[in-house]
Length: 143
Image (cartoon, rainbow, N blue to C red; front, side, top):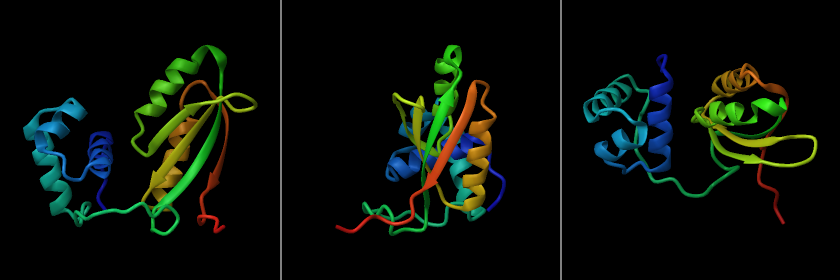
């Protein structure tokens, strides 16, 4: 996979949410022009970064993606800026405020361990993040 930038990652995340979204819808969602979306999408397909479009069923724990939860401690006065920074990472698919030892809990989803490692590093480099603890989701518990 080639090097992709933040806009590419946001485009991929949007397509993961709705693989049938129109170019116009993607452009509006990402805040970029339709021609930019089309150019980037064509490049991602041509380079093999996006290999196919498919139907995805709810199969958490049975697919090849890396899933994890990350508990995050935040420096009090920076809570809003930390939250804004984390919401810009497309690999964090859910972010919740909580109480107790941790201030935020994020759900992380990546396609490789290398991407996962990059996300962990990016989160820890956000000014105001004091500490974090991450747990990989290995397999869905069977009842």
